[in-house]
Length: 118
Image (cartoon, rainbow, N blue to C red):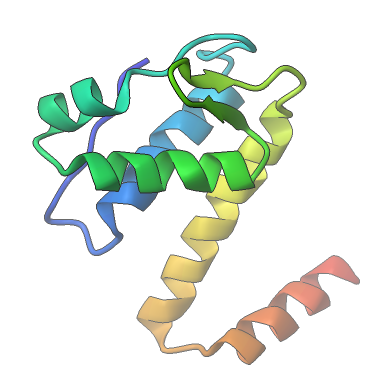
């Protein structure tokens, strides 16, 4: 699995790391039980802080996509729904686009509700 970040992009580096893993799960490139790169190793290879990597991994854990175990590292969770990973990634893209357009949270929620009722 290839994880890349672009410091020139407006989204936080931790979000970029999480998005790379989500895409790998959604594309079937990463499978249940697969270990993610160690936080120290990934931080060194991306030239970012270990805390940045851990923040990205924690987001994925909170979404139910990976398990974090002290001393064992991060692994793709069994039953991690690939479809959910894709939807979470799309939601992030939607929020980023809405921010660029100047929409606030309430306006975005209303747009999503309207789309869900169609």
